[in-house]
Amino acid sequence: MRSSIPAAAWPRGRGGVAPQIIAGRVSPEAAEIPTCTPSEMDMHLDSRKASLPSALGMGGEARQLGEDEFHSEFPGAHYCSSDFFEGPQKFHREVVQAYISRFQLQLKQNERFIEDAQARVTNAERLCARLQRAALTAQRESEAAVIRAEADGGQLRAFRAGNETVFPLPWKGLQHKRPIGAHDDVDLLRQRQGVLEAERASLSAELRQHREDAEELAAKSVAARRRELQLRSKLEAARQRCTTEKREIEQRHAKEREAFVHEMQAELEAVAAATEKEVAMLTAQHEEEVHSLRRAEAAASHRHSDGASRSEAAAAESAARLQETQSLRRLCENSSGEVSRLSAELRAMQAAGFDLQVRCGSVSEGQDSADSEVERETDFFRARCESIERHRADAVSHRACNLSAWLGGVAREHCALPRGRMEGL
Image (cartoon, rainbow, N blue to C red; front, side, top):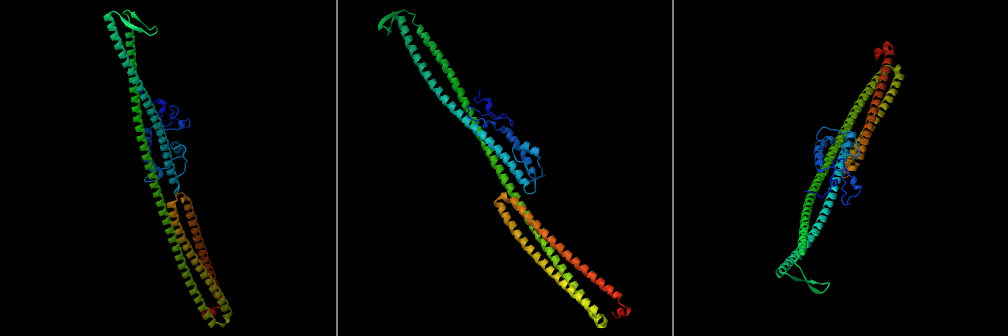
């Protein structure tokens, strides 16, 4: 069966050009669109179904496409590396955008092909109608020629029977006799009738061929429409998968953020409790040491009147130590207040994190900035907690050093006393 569509109108593979320039219906810019056949598109989609989840890090081993492989697979797309937050989403969006672009190109080509096929069907229908009218005209002419041939045959038979007949001569207006040789007109009519029959047969064959071409074009148009519906369904399925995976990624990130906030809050509470316990223990120990020193100084002043000056000095030093203890207590209270303020700020950060999660559910484009803001706030609070812990440790170590030095001085003074005073002590 002869096809009325030229070979240049069909796609020539993935790397070829689809010059659907049929009767000047496609512009040269549209003819430069790279296309692939429907079978190649199905094979490519089937081959990418298995590798797409693993490339996105969903449900399998995480596989990162190289830059060369990505550009060879998706020409014109933007390459991005795979990060924890933004890498899989950007890569997934690029993959889906590439598939959507490819589907849209295929749909545009199918629409152009359908329009061209419809135009060819319309032209074929018009040609069929014209050929039908020509066939009817030829049939009428052949019937009139047959009628004229029969009339001429009757005249010929009458002429042969009467051996003569009268033919009108309109250019003279007279009646003349002609001999028997007038059957040449009948032969000419029969030849013309044969020519008309042959022309009618050729027109019928051409009409039949045009009908077959029109049926073929209609079948191809139906197939193209069916293929377009399949591509649209696949595109919709790809969009739904993209939406589902994006929602899963957002939910997982929200859970991880919430767990991190709870962990930081528990860590801050543990640090505050440990700081309060240590401050209370150091305060009690220092008070006990001060009381013991006061009792020892009182006993020494009661037994030895000559050591009054030393007792006064020790009392002054004890008062200084007490003042230092009070300052350390105030520092601990300030540290406790700072820890409480940090806990309140952490709770505010948690509320802001949940608000950020709600905003991320409504506007997915602000997720990267929100994650960076949460990370900056978390780092800031962690640094503040570490600085408070270092300050508290420095204060405790400084206080311990001072107490050790003071006790060493007291021990040296007691060692320097005479034996009698030592026995009295």
